[in-house]
Length: 324
Image (cartoon, rainbow, N blue to C red; front, top):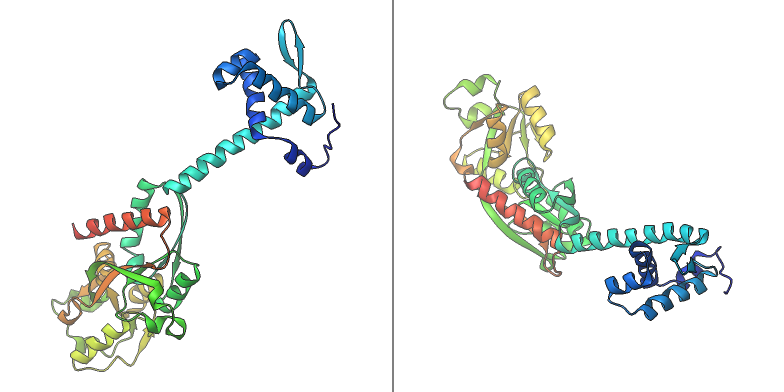
């Protein structure tokens, strides 16, 4: 038999064929060439030749042959252990690839804004777990001016939040508008909110004039809702409050509302959730009732992966939950 350069993994890989490994293991498991030929639907000569070729490539006998049958040599036992590892890894690879193709496994990066991060996104992730429990979800929070360029670069797979009337201001040099697609999910207004512990929370009706001089939290200038907020104050015959903090960070905003007594303008769905938890008090103002549309944004110039398609299904189911 020819000598094999056992120092070189590349040399070994060039000599071996995966079918040979499978036949070798099947002969061991079934106990004979005859039994292996039946299970593999191959002829005995084909099985025998495969084993002989493998031994030739390895430069050492794998079996001791006698009238009583075939028994592994010490060299064959070493080879068996590694052959089983190789075949098991191939099985894992096959399972992982099949899971990825069906969307049951994989990775999705979701960009989100405050409007979605506290309500529909957690529901969507929960629903996705039922559809595809092994998908890894990475959430990146930011404004449209950050998330849309990331979408074009491929750093995020989908952006979830309030849809802008015009995407151009959020894209570098106003380029790439034709490469993204917005899909509306539901109409969502804005609410003025204060802490549930604020003395004003006990009043039946609070006038905007009572709040105007207070510290306010409003969306950042580069967010889709900022124009709606400007329009709200304009229609109320007021200027924007003088003492303003611009923020789309939901945790920061909650802390400022609860601990520092600030007033905030928050998406209705998020405000409803935090009100149910007893954290804030919603103050009703008609002009903010139907100010925004929540939806998702994806690339329009490429087919969505199965993982993204499954996430969109989970989003749509979450929308039904919100509306029910």
